[in-house]
Image (cartoon, rainbow, N blue to C red; front, side, top):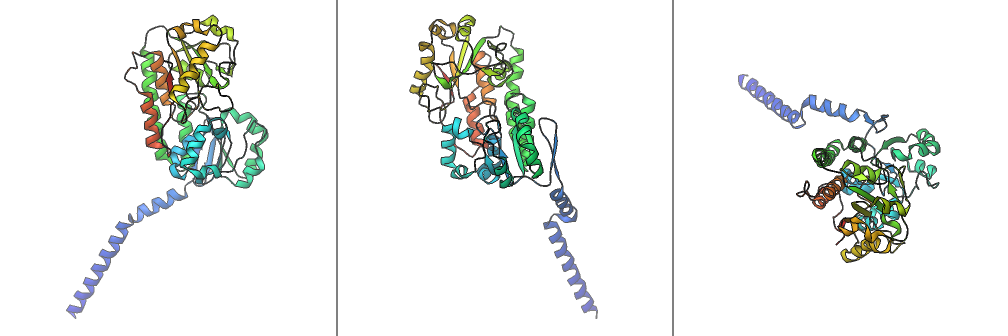
Length: 390
């Protein structure tokens, strides 16, 4: 009888040990309960306009706008990696239209991107609300510049279909708005930790530039900025001092000569540049194959060809050969697709180094851009993104 009791006690002890081990392996009752609570917890997102958007779970299907610049495409790519095509249910065509070299490069490395349905663009009279509803997205990301048009044309129908709208803003080139946009997209996709890592990378680089610029006590260089899309033959858009390239240059310590004559972005009278005679000229490049004289940078740029294209702006425009920026060899180009994006910390560095070469001599903007690609993006880095006229 004693032996039987001892045996039963032994069995009971073993059973308790096994149960204990199983509970420990599963994280314990309290952790299991906690995980279940987290899984059922709704996600609250505050977008750049201060609106609160609530999702029952991370978005699995999203629609985006302004893929070519100022939209969420690169943030989504950095957050989702190789799964990027799986979450994009529909998008506009600005990336393939205005950043053709980027689109070719990305779709070569990730062919599934090319299969994403096209939904048009808000404001271009081709945004297909019915198609967006049919795609059944959880969320649509709208750059705040499109807000008024979007709310006039489409938002009510998407609200009724249960599609949540999240506003983002990369165009203002405001650090806080960049941070809020990254955070909102990250939360919506259930990638908060990854978003925090991306935001920290961005914030660390930008803050170092801005903090150092504040300590510089010397006259600000005067700068003329122009998108080189139309080539030397015709003046293309320049910028105000608080929008896009103009905002970036102002933050990096330049005096933008068009700051008071351009409301946001528009071409200017050619005589104005001659009158102002800026210290520095920057012609933005990209890949616009319809205009062979446009400034070309990016994945498919050729150093010799791009140098010739940039030089043509200084030799073919009347009076430009006498400008001090040309005489002093202070003519530059940057890829037009770099600002208004999650990786434009590299642009802050390049501008600051151009305006104040001594104060930023150890900074390597191209290394920063390459590091972002290597750390966060599912695409390889190559091409020419910054150029100084020889």
